Amino acid sequence: MAAPMNAGSGAFSYANNSSYQRTGFNSAKNLIKDVLIQSIDVKTLMSSTISNTFTITDLGCSTGPNTFLAVENIIDAIEQKYRSQGENPASLEFQVFFNDQVSNDFNTLFASLPVDRHYYAAGVPGSFRGRLYPNSSICLAYCASSIHWLSKIPEELVDKNSPAWNYGKIHYTDARDEVVAAYEAQFEADMDGFLNARGKEIVRGGVIVIISPGVPDGALANHVGITFRFVESILIGMVKEGLIKQDGVDSFNIPHVYPSVKQMSKIVEKNGCFSIKKMEMRNTRTELEASIDHDGAIMHLRAAMEGTFLKHFGRKTAEELFKRTIQQKSTLYDMMDKSRSEIGAQIFAVLTRK
Ligand SMILES: C[S@@+](CC[C@H](N)C(=O)[O-])C[C@H]1O[C@@H](n2cnc3c(N)ncnc32)[C@H](O)[C@@H]1O
Image 1: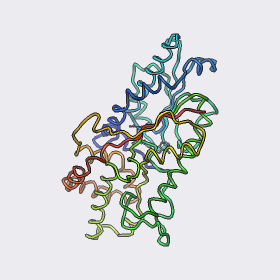
Image 2: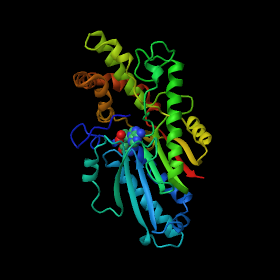
Image 3: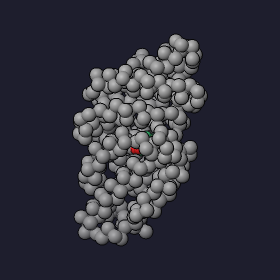
Image 4: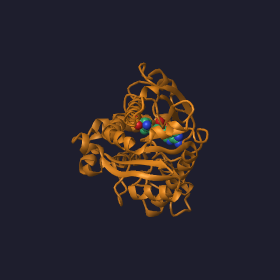
């Protein structure tokens, strides 16, 4: 189970350090709208409901504010499509289910719900790897910057007798083939669970929109992977200084996989519940901003990953680690500058329920 994003609205909170993920959404905003207008027959979907209610879920919504922007954009698209079908969008009602893990800070999310919203809001706790909603009750599912979190670390990664034992490393981006294969197998199993659950919950003709950090076909690392290499080097330094044990690093693995289009489309096709309306690799940075936000990388790392490090290493080590990320930030900046092309890679997918 993934650790939650940093709660509340303080200096290290996700609410204040999620502009990376927001850039991901902003760069795809118009595309999402266009694809939804093309792919969803709102009139037909609504003719099969009694109440004219269009149901939306944001899977892995965290604490905001990104989720609210995404929901507004989706509602705009649906209303626009309904209008273009000769119907009055004012007759539509929207029910939005904000989903995240039970440990998510739903209080911060609810406290910041837009006051002028035109939808009914509800929080739904639980893992999106399994069922969350009744059969055929959801018209549209949105999942941004969340699908790359694995439900668990494959056991072989911490098994000293396995060829996939990931000693001395904290992720698969620079690791042996067996490690990469173990991560990929877990991602495939998790995605299959996700698609099977959505296959039951989403009405025929309904859609899933997925935005996720990804990699071009054949590549392994992206911007987040670069940051992990940096963190790994700090942890190894702390082992050398005797501050933590080698075992602690050997048994720690970041539960993230960044899929490629090839990998993702294979999983969706094998699963069979959805057809691929659109699936492409995009680069959010080149589209929206040429420069790399170096300082942002460190703050975002902490906001999104502090819980994961705390859980494994404890507070004292996690605090020291994040202190060192600031002290040694020029190393990260160099790494990022040398890997410019890997920064901002994002997979964008729209799937339609068959
Ligand atoms: C980086 S945040 C993205 C938040 C938001 N979608 C955005 O774009 O800013 C990832 C979120 O996914 C959630 N998450 C990860 N695995 C999950 C799962 N299996 N079920 C539900 N939520 C999950 C995490 O708790 C976290 O809040």
